[in-house]
Length: 162
Image (cartoon, rainbow, N blue to C red; front, side, top):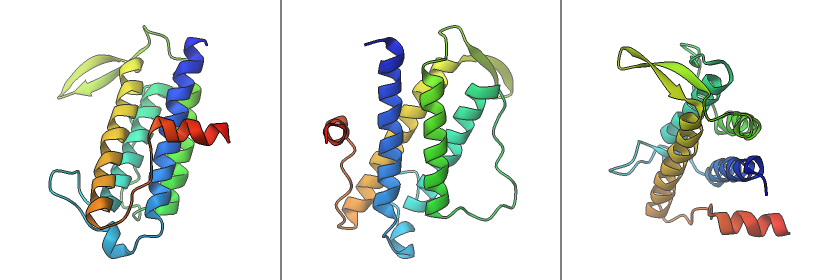
């Protein structure tokens, strides 16, 4: 197995898990989507939106070095729109994961100071950030008495084998 294949596998799982958590939330009522839990980012809806915007930002930085700016005054996205966005950015991260070289970096405003950040850190952050927030959503679902979807690599692998 080649390193690019390994990275693609990690990002294919990442995309699959993001889509699966959104799919698990599609049947929820507005009241359930607006539930949060102490110690989490916020409500399920807010957390999914945050994940979507962050992933757009990571991918934009990796592609062009430019920050993603969400259109001001845009209406809140529906779950279906968030899913489509995560599907698109997930595909973009899969494509870029194998192309980023160890020395590739982008300049980011870091607390008012320009700083060179390796693109590999942005790729790492994309996975870690989403994993953390998916776990938070799963905790909220559990609190609501709803069985969250299985997002582990074993379940992903089992699905590939079918």
